[in-house]
Length: 221
Length: 221
DNA sequence: TCGGTGTTTACGGAATTCCGTAAGGAACAA
DNA sequence: TTGTTCCTTACGGAATTCCGTAAACACCGA
Image (cartoon, rainbow over the protein chains, first blue to last red):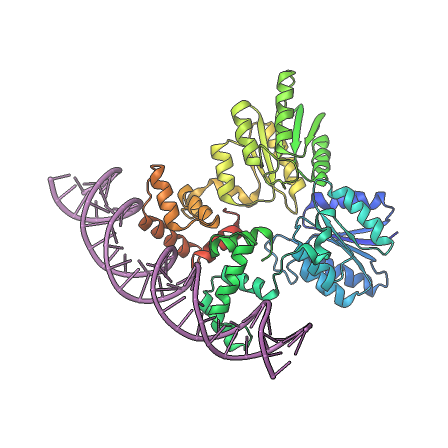
């Protein structure tokens, strides 16, 4: 079992809950953070004192407050942690259940577990901690199929970026021009329209506004 | 202090946390629900047994799952509870911190407290329970100004509904026609355009897509 | 090399949205 | 009553998006 664990979540209620779970799993040293910057500093400090953490449990979404944050969300933190502590285990404990996001975290950042904060979140987190301690990867059942890309729709980075820019107020023409200046292909207005049409069919969207709203709900952007 | 309290939240971790808080506030009888329908049934059952609850603490957002829900979210539940149990105290304990939503809940549904699940959510919930027990209305500091409408932008229910329908894929013309059949005024395409223009200025949106994306991020829709 | 397939690009007309101008009407104070 | 203000409605041209057709091009297996 893990010896020293850092938990990072902005809700005090969740921190208490995770602490309970860790204790019942047999973890002795538990530290808490409520900001990603704070979490990172604690990890660094432990490293200097050669008493490193061996597990990080973190949320993804953090509410901003008056402080200005360097690492704004869990994804930023995970990216940084993976650079500096490649051997540390990471479990994500989040409300998000978007396959896209899970896949990114597991495949790109190599997180070891992904648990959905949910009706049974506590129980699943307990299982995740035990599994990850044994060197396995744990995914909540709801997002398990994230890593089995078979049954999944084909939408690539270009599509995501497209919708993302639209949601930021860019016109289709803006996007086309921008891609041309950056020499990124495809970049024609025509292709952008075609891609959007494909996406509208896939997501059963009546128009572009609808498409953006749907994908926002899905957490794709 | 309250005698019998029902808590309703879909996260088991949060339920445990609230239970702890209630115990430390001196509440003896605590029941839990993880679905709005379940909560409503428990309230009704208690009424039949003439052992009514005197406080309901509920979340607003509930994840759907395989069950089909009658009451889909906390707002539905509160509306129903206010009809059937006009004297019951209600505290909302939610992630949402949108003034619009808070104002609606307090003014229209007469909820007695609104606590933001937050870095200090547990502490505030404890205070809220004590205040509401004394007959006061408690609002988290973050949303306190919701009831002081002075510094707030003027967006009415019509505006919200407008953006909401747009996000569901309706065209401006669709909306106009629908309003006409329902004899709701204003309903002209022209006014819809004008309202949208005003909103775009207010939210610094470049176009309608942008507007929908922004208001979705703000939780207005 | 030759089709077949799929993607990118171009183009044009239809539909919709955008945006300014202006008239009609209700509320209100002088 | 009159004038002011605010909201609603109407209209028209410009801009943008929507949608179908079709050509250009790359990739790949036969």
